[in-house]
Each structure stands twice: as C-alpha cells, then as structure tokens.
Amino acid sequence: MNSALTRTELTTKIEALRQQGICYVCHDLQTGELFGAQSVIYEDADFRVVLELHPRMVGHTIVLYKPHREDVSELTNSETAHVFQMCVKVIQAIKQALGAEKVYMVTMCDGPINHLHIQLLPRYPDEPIGSKRLVSPRGVLVDAEKTAAAIRQALH
Ligand SMILES: [Zn+2]
Image 1 (cartoon, rainbow, N blue to C red):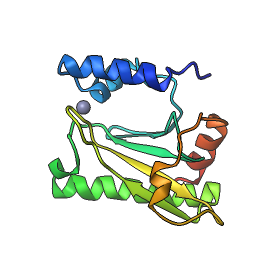
Image 2: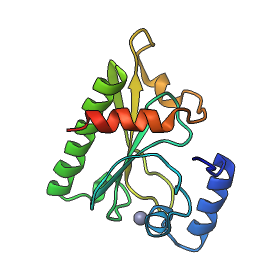
Image 3: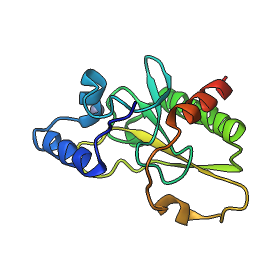
C-alpha cells in the first residue's frame, strides 16, 4: 500500500512548511499529506501510534500526542501521565507481539516548530545493549501491515 515519500522528499516538504511557520505534524493530522500511507497501530482522539517509515529496526514505533506541544516540557501533569501511560502500553505490546527484550524510549523534538512525539526502539534478544541502537542505520519499512497488526493485537 505504501507509495511513501522518500526521506529526502519528506524532509524537503517538512522544511518548506516550517519556513511558512506551519507545524508539519498538525498539518499532516489535518491533511494526511505527509504520512498518509503510514501504518497506524492505534489511534484515538489524543494519540496516533504508527510504525516509523524509515525504521532503525523492526518495530520502531512513533507515539504521537495530537495536541500541539513543542516537546515534553509543555505537558501538564495530567498530560504527562496520559502520554507516559500510552507509551508503556505500546512498549508492553511490542515486547509481547515482537519478542523484544527491551524497548528504548526517546524523545528529542529539537529544532524549530516541533511537535511532541516519542520514539520506541525495540532491542531483541542477542542484540547489543546500549545507546548505539538509537543511531542504528535507518532502513525501509517491510511487512508493515503484519507488524502493525501484531502490535495492535497485543495492545490492551
Ligand atoms: Zn503541531
């Protein structure tokens, strides 16, 4: 299903929106123009959980908090609880569905006009432990529907 933009095309579009002072995530939530074909694991009024289009490993997942917040520092206490609870649920589902031993949780949201999102990066048994996983080379998303469905099924 995925005729996704290349990472370069995506970066160019995002930069163009930024120069107009537009948040690309809010823009995409309204139009579906950038990540329309992305595999959605879960969605409700506050969250969209998707597989990363250019993943560093199988199961690389993005938890997107829909209301516009530049980064975690803008969250209220109740939002923090809400966001963290969502991440924990997805982490548990990734472990159960994909057999990850650990799931690393990262949020940066650096640079101008950002929109809070959290990256979940699974580490599988026998893979090296440590922060090098955070900069593993990006690949192409394969078996997206199957992976998304497996995580979705394990979510509860
Ligand atoms: Zn936004």
